[in-house]
Length: 111
Length: 79
Image (cartoon, rainbow over all chains, first blue to last red; front, side, top):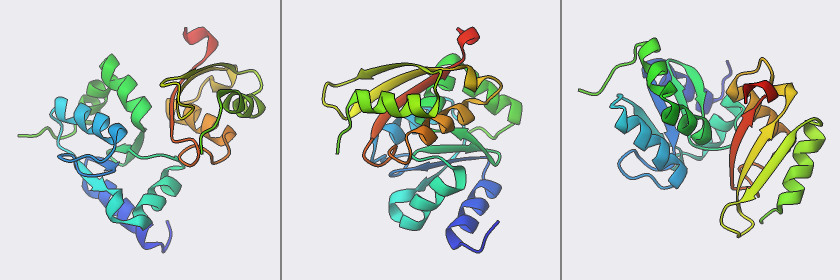
């Protein structure tokens, strides 16, 4: 896609993990209410996911916004595809659509 | 810097002229809003694309001076 190191790191995270959440803080210790809400939805559905803390890396923090053409964090990727930010994920979680999406795409659940 | 609801509404209107917009100031602090946007322009678009259109209309303010705007989009017949 480009020689930008942030872009290649983002690309490899979403290639290597079924479910990736770009967030502020970690799944255990989210640093923002919106990130916490999405991490909570994923934990509730018991899906295995990788949290990438954008606060640890300013290039990823800006890079993911450019990558997805999306201005805010958190951002959820499932099997390489951008699913949405906090509002969309919350809406999908509440309607049961998120679970369906995970089942349809055959993601791995936490043991 | 906070933005007022009328300014947010105007920007969305400029970007998506037929949009029906409802904005709520969630905490009354001029900094945490919820917006419901309905437009025929969203037809055939994914939810991600619909939100991207609204963010586009906000011209980079989202995530900057506009920290918290909970967004819900729909098309007229989806209701």
